[in-house]
Image (tube, rainbow, N blue to C red; front, side):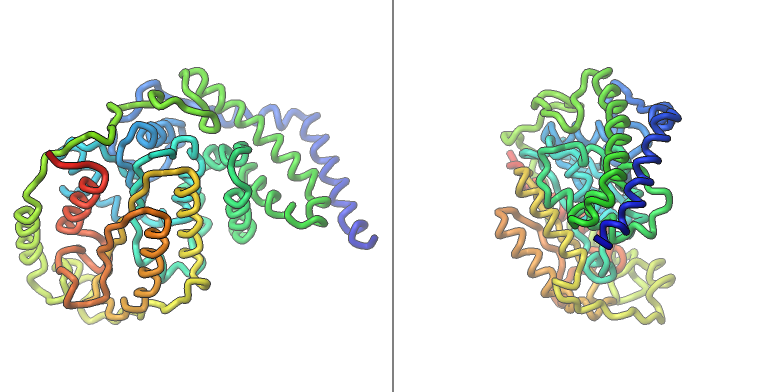
Length: 412
């Protein structure tokens, strides 16, 4: 009885607030503050760091997921768009394999999970390449920060998830737990975030009673807002993300089928040229990093040892498992790239051996494949694979290009 009394006042207050907002027209005016725009032409760009304020980037990503394009999702390595062998440029321009990339620094497993869940109807047989960085599993013991979560996911994409009743509860609840855990660090949360917050709260029977009116109010706002976006899609004769999308819809390039053949390259010759170029660019050190980076970040510096976390302690690893569950559930044609770390500088990289082995095992047990570039052995590491201590260089990207091309297609 005491518990009920404690929650009675907030319950009645919420009802009163909802009534006043409806009467004052605040809910109805919401649509005027958040217009949705969209172009009929899908962007021909091959790289975006995050979603734009309008709908165009979302349409771009969905199109490429649907039409057989190779879609790379990763973090800071993708922002090196000046590299000639970076996959979205080299595969597209030199090998005629349509390839796009999405993400920059901080776009880790949890963000990628949310991005793909938003467009789950586009995932069946989608050629999704997840570029994993071992560094994620060291320094990010609490996983993705709230700041980065809000950068790489927006009110629209999160709203698509909330309104999609076909999504399994474990996926929605995982986001709800995340939002609740970071709620105190989010300023002015919008209705999508509040809906996830109350979704998590309602897992507790007592909290469900106390928060029911708040949850209902924010769901009402969410529904109204999504009606606006639904109409924006309909105006361009495109299906809303929650709806089924025929194979030939949203196609910006020709559909890339499994019979596609690419012209084989002399990868060994190309590799030797890149290694020779790297030797010149790293001539002032034996650590296997470029000269300028060595002077600025390595010479005379001490690097904090990488952490030896258990898998249970690593939030990033738990996020990786949930991402694996999503890809498997929606039958995505996924492929994984595990980038390297420079063992000549990060001498404690062996602390991640057990994590990388566990990642490889999970990938294999789900029936997926990966190209693993990680080694903690100085003898096995090829200098030039990375430009610095963790970012893939030209030689490394060339090896990734070859791995992706041969995984999805056959040469002629």
